[in-house]
Image (cartoon, rainbow, N blue to C red; front, side):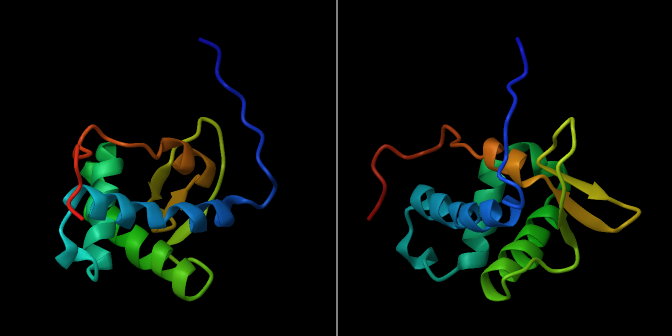
Amino acid sequence: MEAQQFHFIPHSGWAALQIVLGYFETIAYFKQGDPSLLKKHGELFKWGVDDVFQNFKDHNPKLRNALWEELRGGLYHSGIAKSKISIEHREPSVSVRYDSAQRRWIIDPHQFVRDLGYSNKIPEQPVL
């Protein structure tokens, strides 16, 4: 199978992350179906990360905490990620990796967006 080539809008990485970060809370709330969780944004976000990126479980809770505190919190409240997160695209592309020399998580925002997806756990009738 031939690799699919993607063309990106220059400097679009931060914007792409800003748009998709709300997905984790939304999908977790939908799948959990518990109205009492609505105000527990951090719990929902972390549950959603675990559910969507099941291959990251080896790095949890460090990864999900960094995504919540450093990336989601930084972008939503300050407009920029905090110091333990940076973005970069290189081939071969990996959604998230940890650079131990820099002590930071490096995200390829375009691969991160492509890797988002539903698991097979969506309930047939969500509780409203």
